[in-house]
Amino acid sequence: MNAPRVFAALALSTLILSAETDYRFAFPQSEILLGLDIKWLLKSPFGTSLRGELKDSMGDLKPLETLLDQIETVHLSAVSKSGKQSDVLFLVQGKFDQAKIVELGLKNGMKLEQWGKTKVLVQPKAKPAAPSRRQTAQFKAVQFKMDMPAAASKPLFALYDAHNIVIGEEGPVRVALERMESGLTPQANPLFERARNLEASNDIWLIGNTAPLNLPASSGKNADPMTQMASQIRNFSVGVAVRRNVALDLQLQATSPKAAAQMLDMLKGVVAMAKLNSGDKAAEPFPIDLDKALEMSASGSIVRASLNVEQGELEKLMVARATPPGKPATPAPVQVAVAPPPPPKPVEPVAPIVPVRKTVMIYGLPGGPKEIPVN
Image (cartoon, rainbow, N blue to C red; front, top):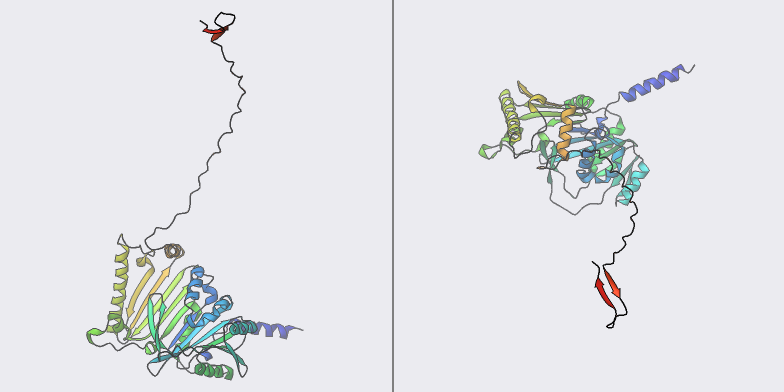
């Protein structure tokens, strides 16, 4: 008789388990999308070091530091604005207590505003600064730069519900909340579908094109090789899975097969330099066997590189990260069993020594007593 309820519960649970990230928060014309599975990353072998790195690099998201254990995923959407700056939106998902977040925000000097059904924490504005500032986002050895809004424009925190927090400047956040409340699906954007594919099998992923990188035009001899290479990338994707082992997959689409071949040669040159440096006795040895773990190839205009690190190599890498440069890893102390000393022997009493007299006194002599030796 309760079969309909059982089937309804099963259907609901199936929908929840198969639910995808709600990309309605993102700019429909997004040019960069990034995702971090914070919950799993903190449980991975890198969890301890990642926790410290996340706290040190939160920047404007510093108010969320005390909520780190409640955060499950973080998503970013970026789009270029006027060719000089980039608009950025964050979606932080987890299990949050809105009342505690509001209390925490008020303690940190924020103001609470009500936008329809959504509570919004607004940070106090900073002193006027330059129109824009260039920030460097780093992903392992991959870096890219974006012109962020002025420092006077502090991001605000929109508490959409108990599971979603949208972070960004006022204008983009208001439009994002309208998209999320309307129930409309995002506009057609090939990045969204590619992002879902990466998210399904990776814990860290980054995808996009070069538009929001705001790279200077490569001209003549003044352009460095990395700038020249980056200017020939149409789009890119990076995925990292951190479970028991570590798997990284990098894919670049160049403007032409010739440019792809040049990129592959440059990547091989970087790897060759790493091997050369690892062979130097004065340098720190590279903890991973690159010949075994790294694969690189180019097909048409596509360049792909994959890195797979097994558990044993991962442990070596963790030891190398924990050891200061130039200092050998400290081996575990060796415990040696030592037999206890024998108990002390009892001291037997010794009879006192009786002194032996060697002289004799004679009394009654006319000159008085006299002491003479005894032969």
